[in-house]
Length: 171
Image (cartoon, rainbow, N blue to C red):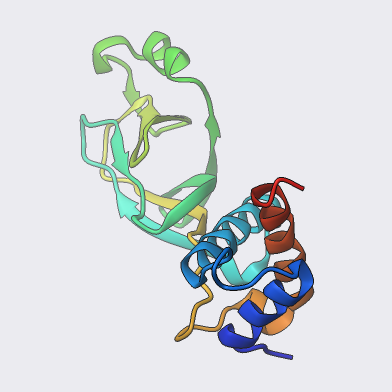
C-alpha cells in the first residue's frame, strides 16, 4: 500500500511529537534521501539492478562508469558471445601487472580508478564489449514521485527515517 508524501511527513512528525518548526519538510526529505541511499547500499533489491554496455578502445585501459551508478556489482567482457567475469583488484595490482600499458590482451582484471572510471588489465588489444552490472542511484520519494520503498516497504522507509530523526533530535 502506497502512502502520500504529505501523509508520510505527518506520520514522522506524529511519531516524534515534533512540529514543522523543528522538523521542516526539507529536513525530513534529507532524512528520507539518507535512508533511501542506506537501504540501497545494504539491500540488493531487483528494482535497482541495472546493467550498461560499453566498448573498450585498443590500447586504452580506462572505461567510464554509468552516470546513475551507485554501487558496482560486477564487470564482464563479452567476446564472440562468450561472457567472462573480470576480477576486481587494487590499482597497484593493475600497475604491476601491466606497467605503462605494455601487456595487452583480453581484460581479466579491473580496478576502481576514480568515481567515474575503472581501469582494465591487461590493456585491451581489441574493441571488447564490457558489461557493467550495477545498482543504480535510487529514485527519491517526494511530493511528485512515489518509489518502490514508498509503495511496497513503507514501514522500512519510516523506521529508517525515524532512526535518522532520533539522532538529529539528540535521542
